[in-house]
Length: 172
Image (tube, rainbow, N blue to C red):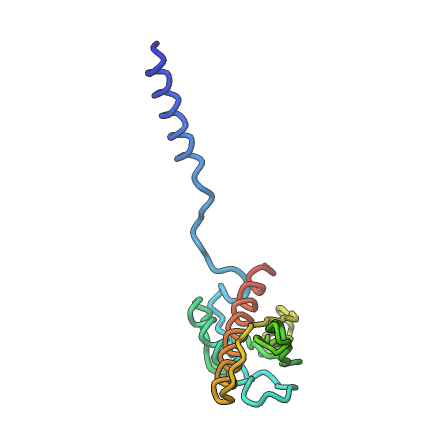
């Protein structure tokens, strides 16, 4: 057998072995308590922070995330599960400074405790503490500064919602 033919045979064998072994990807299937189609009611989290309206922002993010991932978000009367929680803290900290020692960026940090439980029995299915942060720039215009902080809080709430979904799935 010639060298070129041997090389072609080896390459063909490697290709076939690669196809047989696959690449490690698999179909994404829902796992955990939400995979059964029980439906979940997402309530407003209790807000223990000075930041008003944060509970609404987080609730919208949770509903969007669970609906996007086919979490079957339902009203309280129809859902078998409920997601409840507490927003424990909201803070902003300076994270970068200019050469004149003025603040250039802040970071929003939000910490929550979330609990997924069965509505009828109140049995806790999953419980976790989560924290997310998002950096935003300083602006001399106060309105733009507040808009940037609000956008950062929305982004942090989205990440918390993603984390809740992932952690509920990982628990099973």
